[in-house]
Each structure stands twice: as structure tokens, then as C-alpha cells.
Image (cartoon, rainbow, N blue to C red; front, side, top):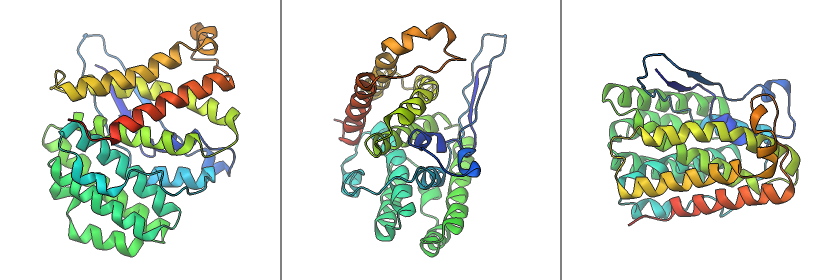
Length: 284
């Protein structure tokens, strides 16, 4: 059995690609990705969607500056009619909410919570995201990182429980893919330290492989939009695996980290931006 678990605070890995320092506690806030393979040839992918607050904590640890107009506009929430787009952008908006919250953009964070509620309702998670008590707690927690953390963990627990009870855990992989790509997009051009960013960007590729596996566990694999999204994420992986620095250490990839050149970094960054641009644009 192939089991893929994204443990809290796994989503911190998304923004650890831009971490250039910080305390020992901050440096330890990384992802744990557990892969276990059985011998019976069967497969069962198990995904635990990490909480968006871990992204916020990673932004804080990385010291990234807030850049206006980089997030996906909340107005787009009304334009997603295809379920795959709704799920992916639910993840995108989760990252955007955390990005705003950690940078004290209180109203913007609240606006993204509203967008998340709207998107959650569209994908059948209304019971999770419309909990008035949680929303009240969120509002009170703005400006208090610890309180906000507790609320988002609670929301995540309810989301995981709902998907588990309704045999919908494969949806978590799609939602996570949106949070992942948005984290990379927001971080790529947010630092001048390309060396450290490049090293951490390389570390993302094993997670990308798991995301692609998650896509392919979806029962509607022949869905046109899903097939297009899978192709785009595979394009990022293909670009990465085709880099000379990666090919050079391919046989020792588990013990040696490829050192990307500036040109290679830009090629990978270009692919990430292209994919992100496509998924936030409503599909038809």
C-alpha cells in the first residue's frame, strides 16, 4: 500500500523555499512526508491537508515582505464554475488568506475567508466553512497569531473529518495543489537570495510528485480540466528533471542536492508562474 501523509505543519514546506535564516525553532518548521510501500501491489493514497496557518508561519520565518496585488483577487471566486478550478482555488485562497493575516492585512484576510467560504460551499464543504462560531473566532483572532492558529487548525480538523467520513479524501490533494503552487508563486520573486531559494525549490519536487499521484487518484481522471491541470503540473516536474544540474546528480538524488544555476532557476520559476496563471484563470 502506498500511503502519502502530509503531516502538520507540512504546508510550511511550501514557503520554506524562501527561508534564509531564523531561529532554530523556525528552521525546524518543515514538512514531514511519509511514504510507505506495501508488497501486495495495491495502492491507497491517504492525504491529510495541512493547515494554511503553517504557510503564514513560514512567511513570518522567511521574513518575506508583503507585496500588494500578487494574490488571486477575491472577485474571481464568483467566476469558477468548474469543480476542479473551485477546489484548486480553495487552496490558493487559503494561502492568500494566510499571507494577508501574517502581514497584518486584517480586512484583506477577512475578505479571503469570505472567498474561502464561498468556494467551500461550491465544492460541497459548506458545513465546514459556514460554521458561524468558527468565523466569529477567526474575526476575534485577527492580530493574534496564536488564536488564529487555533481557529485554522479547528477548521482543518473539520474539513479532514468531513472528507474522511464522506470518502472524499482525494479532493484534499487537489486543494493542496492550489495552496502549494500559490506558495511558490508568492515566494519566488520575494527575495534576492536565489541560492537558498533554489535549494529549497529543489526540495519541493518530491512533494510535487506526490501531488501528481494525488491528481491521478481522482475517480474522474478523464475530466478535461483535470487532465489539463495534471499536464501542467507534470510540465513543472519535466522541466525540473530536464535541468542539467538535476541530471548530473540524478543517480544520487537522495543524498545530493542539485545546485541550480541562475538560468535553471529562472526556467523553473517561469514554469511555476505559467501554471499558477492558468489555474487562477477560470477554466471553460
